[in-house]
Amino acid sequence: MSLAAETRRAVAKHPFLVSALRASVVNYTAAARFLDVEGDVDAIATALRRYAAELPDYDREPRDVRVRMERGVDELEPADRDDVSLAVGNGVFGAGSGEFTEIVATGTVDGRALAAVLERLAVDDVDVVAAGVAADTLVVVVERLEGASALRGVEDALDGVPVEPSAQQI
Image 1 (cartoon, rainbow, N blue to C red):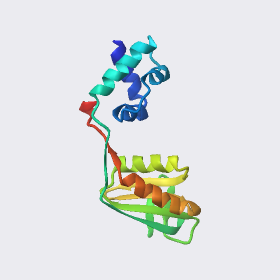
Image 2 (image 1 turned 90 degrees about the vertical axis):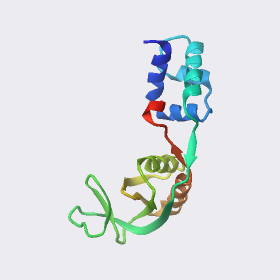
Image 3 (image 1 turned 60 degrees about the vertical axis):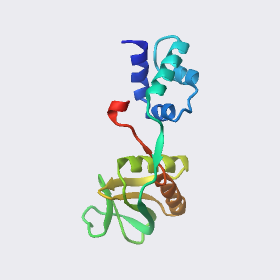
């Protein structure tokens, strides 16, 4: 396998690096040192530069969504399915007078939007208890006191979701 192919394969294991290459915000030498690729650091950095030049630009698109916050969300028993807003594995959440807050976004949401929201909340140091997306609804459950921060983070994240290139472009 060529050094360029090995470098691309190593980059693919780190999606954040693909995004950084697309956004042109990479120190190529530092990235070459970071990657687990055998070879001269300068040659790997050159392979990264060439790869970055082939990638589509890092674009963002706002989503057409309505975001609201619901306080007092409970973790429910699996049998209590009347007011469920999110169920993931054995975790079932819904309306009540509980210790959680949920942020609900409806509209053009998908897995990419959820990924952007989770990344943003991680940067904002907001702990997510549960999250999911289906059809036209995205739900994030956080501790009660994290609600306002989570609401702002979700709104900001959905204001500019990264547009991912198709698999053929990478």
